[in-house]
Amino acid sequence: MNAQERKQLQITAAKVRLGIIEGVFHAKSGHPGGSLSSAEIFTYLYCKEMHVDPQDPQNPGRDRFVLSKGHCAPGLYAALAQRGYFDENELQKLRHIGAMLQGHPDMKGTPGVDMSSGSLGQGVSAAVGMALAGKLDKASYRVYTLLGDGEIEEGQVWEAAMFAGHHKLDNLCCIVDFNGLQIDGPVAEVGGPEPIDQKFEAFGFETMAIDGNDFDEIEKALEAAKACQGKPFAIIAKTIKGKGVSFMENQAGWHGKAPNGEEYEAAMAELKKSLEVLEHA
Image 1: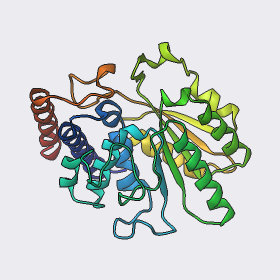
Image 2: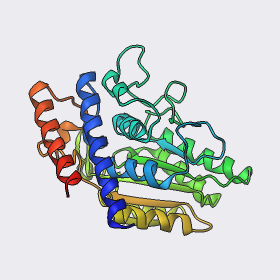
Image 3: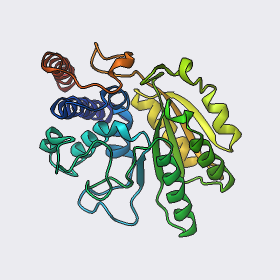
Image 4: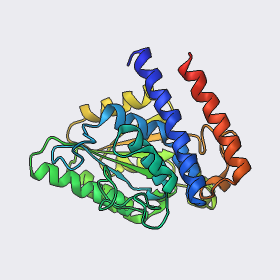
């Protein structure tokens, strides 16, 4: 990508982070840490990679995305708002009764959500099913799914991986947000999923490890995924939990906690300053 494209993606990711904090604060609950770590991934997928149309969200030829780590819905919603699926003001109604944006993605209530998710391990299984359907229908769409590194402690993830490898679903791209922390602490201490790449490879995947907060590396990996034939693709994206808000970064306590008023103001000020720097660079 050229410098202008990179700058625009960085600006959008900064706005996605603002939307995440806005939503979680007004909900008084939610999951900021893993939403913030995935901001670049959400931004690149919806603003550059996927063939989607906010004006026609159910188009049968669209690419599909499944947020397997469904608790990070604030990140997905902020990206969908930036892409134009709904007004950004909806983010302030996150988790409110009767609102469009609930605590986990709802395909029946939110434009742009392709699969309801939340129970860990089930989203990737649905994505595998979508990819198989695409193959059977000889359709051209691709399927992307984002998993958490804590989520891959679920056995169902590896059943889905085995199925995907067996059926050679090269229209499937699994992205693991490898931020190293889950609700109970460091992933390495709780479940120890490494080596993640070798596990996916054992099930017939092609893999690539990247810096998941770097747009150039995300682009390189997704281009490799599209070029891969006869195998599903897994991207192991090393990220920083809570990225963009200094006091949230690499802190497991911000996995599933909303900021109070003072923390909200501090986080928004820091993110707005980062956005201003990008816009005037």
